[in-house]
Image (spheres, rainbow, N blue to C red):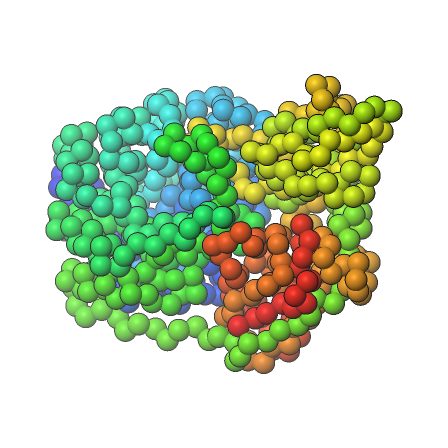
Length: 585
């Protein structure tokens, strides 16, 4: 069996100095049947190691109830089969532009700002989770014949807090769970971040996109010895809905990569291949230098302007990085694998069946809750999806402004069954006053929980109340419609009917069948869609939204099949069927 260690100046493999040439690939953002191809692409670019986060909320939807935790083990086995090493970053917090930074909604809903600290209740949940997860890692460490060479303690903690007792506890828990490979932390190359995020005796690494020499000088002030490593070399960036598409020049990125390696340092390219935020798992940020301003939800694509694009294809950045990395390879780089198969040609189908949102809620929704004030998503147990809040404005009374205080994040509002407007976190008041009596319905969607900064752990839904003039309206009926409820057997019970005139411009659930000859990777577009979610053969591709910059959704080839493919479209604002078609290309 081999050994991997942290030396005074270098990483040591069986006692010999070795440089890590790693790339980030989040297995949970790539269809499992395509892991092998993406790993081959990393190797062809010149990388010998792969790094991945592990999202806690993907696997523990309720305390003590676990999903497919073994997926991490299967991915690490695929890494071993590809002849690569693995760096695992299990959190418990991961950021990653992922919903809630990977923390479960039920955890932050209960504990709020007590998470990521030495709070006793929080630590108990973390320990239970790590003891369920880490056997997947421990069994596959390099000293036991596996690919895992390092494990991270928390994640960029210096950007958030300064609870050294908590960080040391996480490190000790990893060791107690059987982790034998070196531990490390990663933070921005700034004094306060490295001070807050480092653990004595644990290797500190730095995250940055340029200026390697200056960054490593700062790191050396905090860590005089040990190997230098950029744990996140930001070669691109992610996109937010309604903002410009992020692009980084390939030549500029290649020169920054070259500078890191010329410093004698190891590197982890973030992202080498980004993948996709399937099933509504994209997170959100807050605007501004202090990350406390306007909500900026992340798009479904996690292409990241990476060297290997969302569909697994090489970009110009791939070829420029390959040129740089070839100089550090022990021999010729592997050939670039053949691209994944794409569908034989463009196809389209009309959205010809429809059910209004209210009927979808009756079939797929959770049990209705009745409360004096609006319960949050967390109180209703809703992680991803929408909640319908229904309340009655008493009367008779003259028209007054109707304001939704603490709205997170977007609400389509109906007054006596007539659409009255769309409200957001920034625009909380309906454009026209409301007279009483009136029945008000608010269909509220979470656009993604904040994954970074001081606003993490904030609740979703209506977090304060609905106010008519200065008076709060009490007595609320709330019912959740979770994305996880959209399963084939359940959707089959929805009373669909022909779209006709009433469904063409209305919100609701649409269904159609698209015939495909020669299935493979594809992109799906909805020219008439406004905002909602799409499923193909029961697989949720994620959110679409006509505010851009993303204009289509990636469809992994393994999701499609020869012949008929069933498509569901949950349109939340109305318009999906206006153009009459779902298009695959």
